[in-house]
Image (cartoon, rainbow, N blue to C red; front, side, top):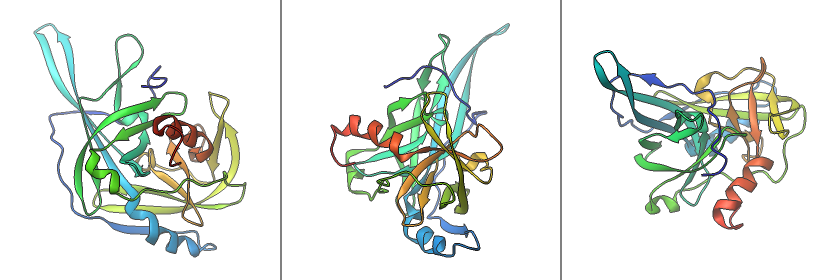
Length: 243
């Protein structure tokens, strides 16, 4: 894996749990009033948004001996073609004892109208907080989001999408400014905070192109890794083709 260095924020819950199967999800869209075209965008691309579920077995040494717990996590993600999924790195990894990250023991991706598919962590970038998952070869034919040729400009309308239970939630946001991440790369700062359900999920422009992946916010607004940083990561995995 690429640059698996240090843990990032993750919504892991320690409990006895199993991964369940969900039905096809309907879109719940809250577009910006001044940008009604985002409704049409949501209708076209919402099915590309997926739910990523991970499970890890964590051993704890206690006074009574060794105890094993289930750690389960759920996040949003997006299909990008070639059987690949982008999501948040913290949703599919746990910190190890050496200060790095280790992949979850089990990962599955719930695709609308398809159901749960097993996945493995193909690569992760700790600086970006983004993971690339690989689905079975049979999933290579699934549609994928098209990355935008250019990053959006300040003031542009965008659509952030996440999985919320049995529904897909889409919210209109504006690009408020372009910030700088810990890796000195650009980050898209939106005008409204996006709750954890959106982390790892896609952000589309008003033409339906993928412009970013939502990550843990560094400020009061939302934060997304732009397509200009996602494209090199995917190109390395695909040998420079298809992105």
